[in-house]
Image 1 (cartoon, one colour):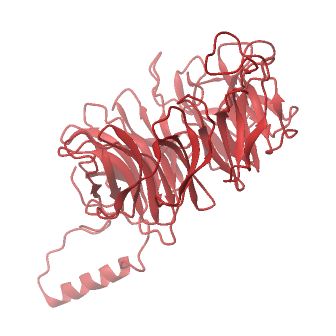
Image 2 (image 1 turned 180 degrees about the vertical axis):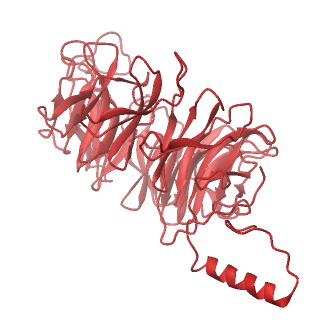
Image 3 (image 1 turned 60 degrees about the horizontal axis):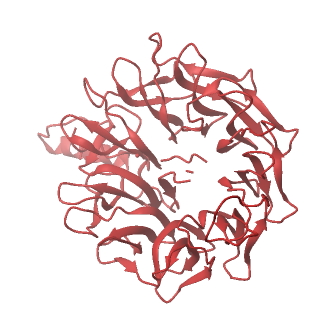
Length: 500
């Protein structure tokens, strides 16, 4: 491995050798060196949460001592063929291929290890791990041999243990791993198809079917078969139940249907008696023929986009009178109410991309038009206002990311196409960072916005190099191409994960 900043030196005598030793000592050793110094070896991603989040594909439990600072991502280059795992320290020289781990995704960090899913020539999608170096990147276990893969997903950590769901022989089960092949094993129990894995107070909560029955229930586990128990049986024959598990201040919030009230907001403290509906937001009668529900069944508000911010849960819901608008809850019936009817009447403003920044909640919503705008809210009706009607991306929520003193997203002002924009929360402080692809009618369409090592990284197409890795410090002159990974083609970097 060649260290950054050093060039090859031919040693011809003892003095030269001593000089080299002094240089190496100055660079630091494994205990006292610069923790951001990447391994520049190797051959020639997080997620962001988009508020990460619903499935953001990335996670982080941190660690006491960081040995590495590297941006992990998936990219294509003609020499390696299919998308593989790449890493970057933010320089062209420090951007290199780490391993032939195909289509890496679902990154999750525990201490000094990042787990992820990837495929290879020998396996389908399986569990991998990396420490940010080429030699430290490897397959953890081929859980489902034969090339089919177990497709690990919903990666979550409790202490030093990774939990995830994986599929073997057509059945999806709950697994755990300590990062070794021998320590990667299934947690057996009377449940099937676990989903929405979420950690609360050191325990793992998830939605799963019970035995051979149809329907999903709320479960919890301490990581053992004996310690895996059902919390609440909703007794509804529907696989679309008990979803969007979100932890906030010692309470688990989620969307569920008890068979009578429709899909509503629920909460749990991990006990059956402490698991109950927060409020029947939409009590309107359920229409049509519904054989699985009683005559007094109601429609439900279908809460979505559950986002914890400032000790309050924000979400979108419909109460039957107003369509889908922004709501908030403190966990009580009286403290659960609509923040503002942004688009009055039967139309929905459909708030999405809820992202916390500088003491406010930012999101994209529609008001009396098909074009979405950027909004902000302090949680009150009067404090919920339009920042700018410059149209964000078509889906409205793509890669909205808080960085430094602004929130960044891609938007179209009707002239420059979809480019990188920033906003400090005021109309005057909302502007395009750079017209990366200045051709008429063209878009650079920045994606995968991820904060890493004091800069904003993303993929973009400038019309010259194709879709490649870019970085920005928030200024026009500081927005630049990091590396043309794929000469005369698109590297299409994606699945970014900041390992720092």
